[in-house]
Length: 356
Image (cartoon, rainbow, N blue to C red; front, side):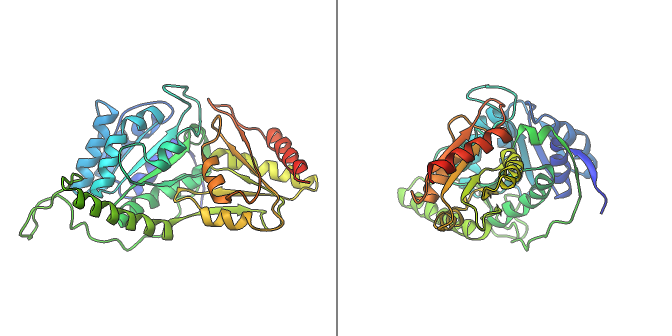
C-alpha cells in the first residue's frame, strides 16, 4: 500500500469524508482552520453539505439539527471555540444524538496562544457543559492514528448514540507525515429509527429531546445514560504499553509528548535504565484498571507523567488509577512549549534515584 504525504488538518477532513460524513458545520480558528477550508472544497464534491456558520455556538447547534435528522455530522475547532460549543455538546449527549467533534488544541486559558497544547483535557474528559454526561475521547499521537480514529469515530458515535471527540494538539494538526489510507473495520450499526426525519410509515413523530421536567423522569434518563457509559467503558477503552514488562519507571503521556517519550526511552535504555511508556489512547474512558494493575507490579518503582499543560491534568487520572501504590512525578509545560527528550531523561533519572 502506497503512502501519501498529508497535513494533519487536511487528513482529518479527508478521513471524515471517506467515513461518510454528510454535513460539516464550523468556524475558522487557528490552528485548525485547514479542516473547514478543505471541507469547503471537497465535501460538496462528495455530495455532502458544508456551512461556515456565523459562530461556534451556531455550528454545534447545526450539528445537533443535522445529526438529529439522522445525518453523519461533525464540527471542528480549537480550544476557545470548543468552549463555546459546550452547551450544544451537553444537549447532544442528553438527547443521545451521535456526532463527531474535533479539537485541535491550543494554549490557554482564555485566548492564550495559537501554539499546541493539551490544556483541554479536563474539558474533554469531564464534560464542559452542564449535567452528568460523557463523550468518548480519542487521542491520536500522529497523523496516521488521527486518520484511522476519524474514520472509526463516526461508527462509534452511531453505535452508542453519543458524541465522540477526537483531540489532537496543534502540532499534529499542522505537521505533515506520510500515511496510508487503509481500511478501517466497519461495525454492525443499529438503524437510526430514532431520527427526526419524517414518519416513514410510523404512526408517530420522533422527538429529539433532552428536557425532562419530572425529577423522576430525569433521574431515570440519567441512569439509562450511566448504563450506556459503562458499556462504552467496557468495550472501547484503549491504551498502549511500550517496554513496560520489566520497567522500573513508567512514563505516562499521550499525543505529541508520547512520541517524544519514545526517544527518551531509547536514551534511557541505552544508559542501562529500565523505563517504559504507558500511553492512554482513549482519554475517556481512561484505562484506569490497566494502569492500576501496572502500578501493582513489584518491578515498577515510580511514574513520570508528561504533558503539555502547566500543572498537569491527566495527572489526576494517573493518580486515581495508581491509588498511591507508587510515587508519581510530573513534567509539563504550557503555551506551546514542548517537553524535551533531555528533560524527560533528567526527570526520569531523578525520579529513579529518589526511590532507590
